[in-house]
Amino acid sequence: MTTLVLPLAEEPPNPLLPHTAEIIFGFVFLVLLAIAFAKVVVPRFEKAYADRTAAIEGGMDEAKQAQAEAKAALEKYNAQLAEARQEAAKIREDAREQGAVIIAEMREQANTEAERIVTHARSQIDAERAQAVASLRSEVGSMATTLAGRIVGESLEDEARQRRTVERFLTELESSESARQAVGTDG
Image (cartoon, rainbow, N blue to C red):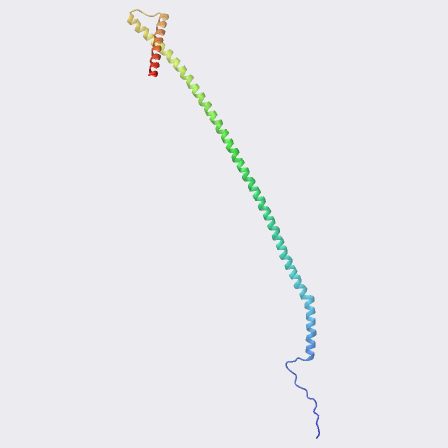
């Protein structure tokens, strides 16, 4: 027997296992890709993350600052509003006081004017009354003298006698009228 030695035949490649060269090439490429990713892409992501974090924190700080400013403005506004209300109340009170003073002055002026008008009217009435009494005395005196002259039958042309007669007559007339009024008010 002769043995035949068959050369080792190459076995067909296993489709599930890649070639060794491909594994080495893939591994080197993966390492290079990881290094490039770590050197270029990761810093950019971290920078973008840091920028976004800073923007968010800055926005939050700005929002807090704006909120604090708004709160300070609100307190200032409320203080001004309270001050304006106090000032308005003071102005209203001053206006009331001034109105009361003006009303009192106007009443005083009206009372003074009314008193002046009443005094003037009384003095005018007294003057007209005195004039009417004097006119009536002279007319009544002349009529009484004429009548008495006709009754008596003699002339009472003497002015002094005429005046005395008229005065006596009017005095008696006034006293009888005063007595009648006194009796009328008593009864």
